[in-house]
Length: 310
Length: 261
Image (cartoon, rainbow over all chains, first blue to last red; front, side):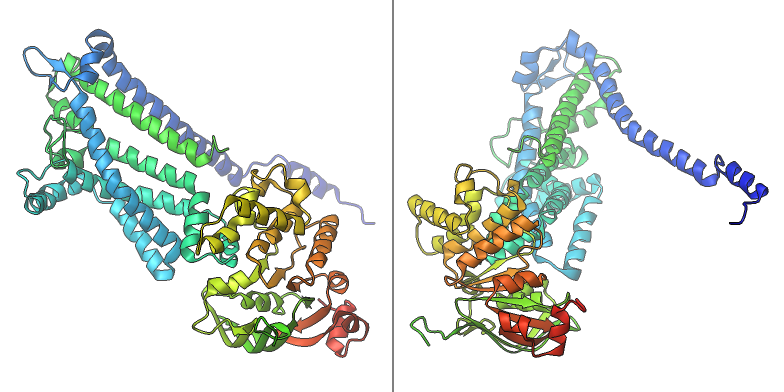
């Protein structure tokens, strides 16, 4: 046995508590990532607190719940102002509803095609195209609604105005399609291939495999995709403002113009007295939107995690 | 030829070659699988035994880059013939996979999945008929007594052994002639293996069973005939006892003595 030289022993011991560059980089990265994660919570709470604080005076002081939810008279600038948001709520709901009617079948169809049928280049190209759809700015969508859809709807359906529920709904449907498609495709892809193989070996046709195995197995993810699409539709502002006609109205057909909650805030907030009743009323609309989208997103999240599954 | 219109062989391949892309996995395979008995396929990993098995019901084609020449006759019909319907082939030929793959639905729905597919295509199936098919299938795989009180529970919650038995049970209600089994016990522990083997042995006679196995002891105790494959070719096909006691081929002898594999 060769004796260990003393000098080497002490050097080894010294190395035990050495902190080199990698150690510091690791530490810093850890903190940065932690800060990033925490900031998401800080921002969401901050936004909620801010919106609530601005709207709180109005909610506690002047808000008449029956008027707010029961009347369509949104006259914030009249001498005797009334704040009935019913038409705005119905406007948002009808546009979102119409959008989902168009977009859910379309998006799920695209997702099914990408996940189950398309292969290789087709698949990659389609995925890129769908993602590009999500990158189009909403004001451009609004522009499409105004300058292309508007005359098209007037001509096709022989109606006087083309800026209406149908127009905004179609535009919004296209805007919500990418997120629904992407999430639904992820859900379909997450179904283990062994399920498909099992069903095929039992003699199921491709359609039977999809209908009886793949879709039931991914229904949570698909539902979450739809909910996220609804949330996207609810919160969209610019395109809806431009394509819906922005008229306070309870729609009775897809050809009626409406006004959305979001569009109202965007259009009016700049002209109000800060801290006044109108200001507060707009923030109250904001609280309503925030709560609704929050609930939708939370539900989507819970659904996708499968809580409440059996 | 018997009254069913096919002869003594349930599966017959003629000059079967198969490529995965540029890689040739099967070379001129001529295999004849006798009806009503258990035939096992042994050989080292990658020798093509699973490929050969998966060609018999054309499930291989899911991969998309598979090319074959030659023919595979199942019950006298070439499964590659243009007029042959894949759905009908797979009704005649059931398959059990390496890892139990029950569907994420109830035990009952699993067993009746294929039955509903095939029967519901042509007629309305009464509930009583389903119940009968369900019980008979589960009894045949010796699973009825342990699951009869929880038929509506998720099949994925069963033990692996029970799952594999269930995967065999769900083939039976559509009355297949042939059962293909791809290392059905490889995911199971020794007692599970024993139970499943025992069950497979009970199905002998009612079905033609072609079973791929890695386990020579299993091939030896649980099959009538044995096929030894090497590098995509069939080296020897004999009655199991003879193949193990007096292999004609030096490679077979080396393999069963454990010199490679």
